[in-house]
Length: 114
Length: 112
Image (cartoon, rainbow over all chains, first blue to last red):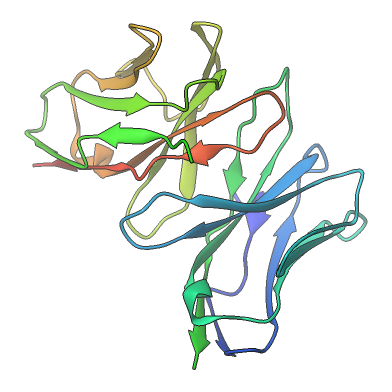
């Protein structure tokens, strides 16, 4: 099941620079996309989401971009901070009667270097 | 900030035994979910639960699995006869209507 793919298993970025994490999906029925951050021994923590009717959503240092024609989304973190070092998961869903079934990517391990 | 809590954090069980994983969702949430993550693999959807019934389940969620909301606050996942391949992290999540899911910190299930 490769409906959601994160092709970069890891990414290393200098503190203060921009981090860009990418995600591709294949199922055109997906209409809601989320990014989660995960530290070891903790559950995924919600970061930011975007509905398919938008192409950009911004929350502080985090911006998610959605390109529906390319079935691609990305998460931009600027400026990157050491506390951003974690595994980032892209997830997608089609909301049916309010309930979501999230389909996750494999995750990208982001390391922010001081 | 309210959070989803899961117990125990680690469960070790003999193969063939029954195990119950417990979750307390965020109190005003309506939709409840279980996911699992086998070591080194993706987080996978198991089941969603709304209005006291299963709304969707995956192929993984076979007859050995069941979910229950016994008392209006707890949400449990039962595996009747565990297999070695059930070893994984199990995450509970909850959400309100059209809101992002919030996850607990998971239960690590180890089958011996």
